[in-house]
Image (cartoon, rainbow, N blue to C red; front, side, top):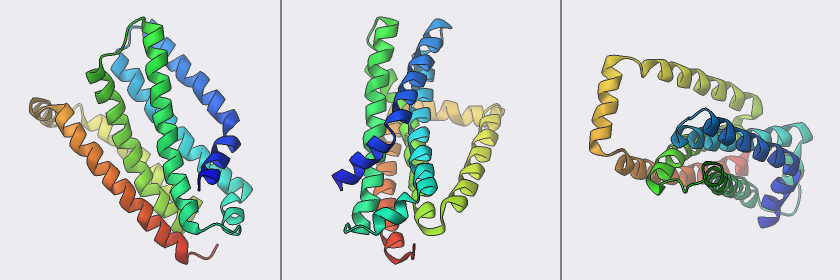
Length: 211
């Protein structure tokens, strides 16, 4: 399984370098215009997580890698677990990279509370989307996954517009009063559970899918 994870990293090494440059640009640009660290840390993790997942799956589709790998003497369980674990490792690596670069650019260590809130929020979003998309990809294919992803993007845009409504603002303030960090910890725990459930579902789906 670890060889499969390493395979993903080696295939994407060019993309990883470009992604690192993009993340560096986001941090430097955000710091220069006085953007709060919360915002560009959140944006950086979202970009890193989304980019890795999209590139990984699109390369599989273009090169028929999934068909090739499943024909090798490796279990389909290992194929699925490698994709899920590789995604987590890549996101955690991006988070560490962002923290180091941000601290260097801003000449100060980012407060752990701010760092947790920003990266934790991004992880909740990325893990939730990934947990939904991977089973669809393994079961229905790449095209169906793209349609669902497009729907999620449209939903996210609508949700962004809804945050300007007074009623939604009141809900946000109510959540803040309860303590966003505590709620975020619960959401992270829930997303990790859903991620494991999604992995189990993807293993079962790929087990009976005829590639």
